[in-house]
Length: 149
Image (cartoon, rainbow, N blue to C red; front, side, top):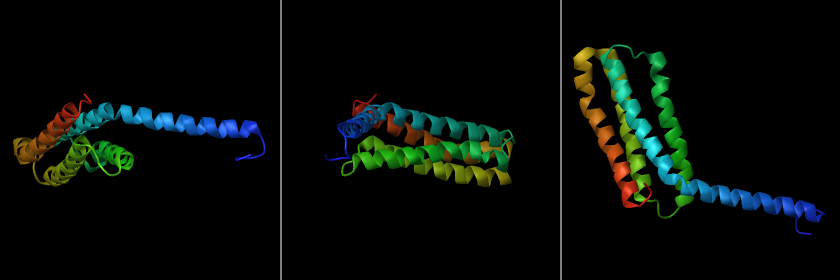
């Protein structure tokens, strides 16, 4: 016997291997939808963050609400990059760019929330927010070009 002393154990191991393989294939098939979801969420949270700073309602304690989507996107990017090994799809590179733009936005947001409020805060965040929005559009365009949306 290859694995253990019984045929049953071999069947169990074989079943696990097949199920894990199918799970990986299914997750890769849902890649487009998951990528679009991460992109949409990062853009939406950037808009929410800008609104909260402009209204004076964003505190240091509420920043984790804005950083959590970034952490989830990081985990997704690591998993997707591991699956795509040599040739990552353009949409993955676009999501990596969006992730970087969102991080820059959060850095600007944290700085602006301490220095400005109201329309001055909104104006200071306008370009970083626009950069995030353009990067989000880039992810969707790449997904469409790949036929994943």
